[in-house]
Image: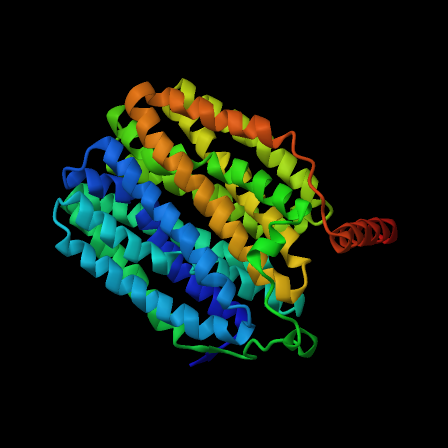
Length: 399
């Protein structure tokens, strides 16, 4: 029952993102199979993102002591398993599905930032590398989305629920293990009060960080909510759609796997700038064509539009004090990956029903706006990047 911190976190991420690989690409198709109109599907997916936002604002910041991470994550995995089971009773009722969506996403919300915060804790102790740990979540997303694409196209849409249930059950089971050493709050942090979220939101540097990430991550809203419908209307099967989603995450896996070597000498500002440019390119292509080769390019760009921006955000948060780390992680997931995507997802459902693929031009415009935000990075991050550059130069000269 004992494992390393790397083993516990990577296995938990594997289980969770397996279920998330079912939820994100295929939940809209499951709603559609139950007779829910396209505009209402966008609303339901938006409700999910909004609930995750509130869950991260209310629940996640209260888990500010690292020794609480594991018990809370166990209960969340169990709750997610129960919530998925309740979907079977929803039938074709919009309001019942909305209720189940709220219950489901209350559990889903903190299951994203808390493992990241736990990985950041161990990364600060030099016990693991975030990128090589997080990569297992991306790999399992590929497995989940590929498997459910095959099962749904071969045996029917109910397999979307069965597969998600399997993912949460597996997550709960692996969470019962104990990492060695267990996370313990540092002595100097025990005397520090839990930072208030609204206090952090009065810091202009934090606001700019959240706005920047909200624009980049929020630009994925149409992709998350209507791209599967858009590609299916263009003649692609669920199987092909699953492969396309998996391809995007393959690119994400490669970026996380090689991030330590590839981006160790780059600052957070540079990483965000590259990601914003990729956002403009990716959604412009998506709005222009559904030909297969451009779609392959679009999905490969997921490594830059999502993974690189996420890596930059984690690096930004990692250099905060431990007492602020969970609060920043909560705000990042609640606002940048929750509220912004919730708002844009509801808009995307409406926009797609009226404008079709042109809704992706709005997503591209968000990348343009992101280029104009001047991010303030912590001094410790600047010093760390400078030290890494000096080390790289010294190693090169010695070789």
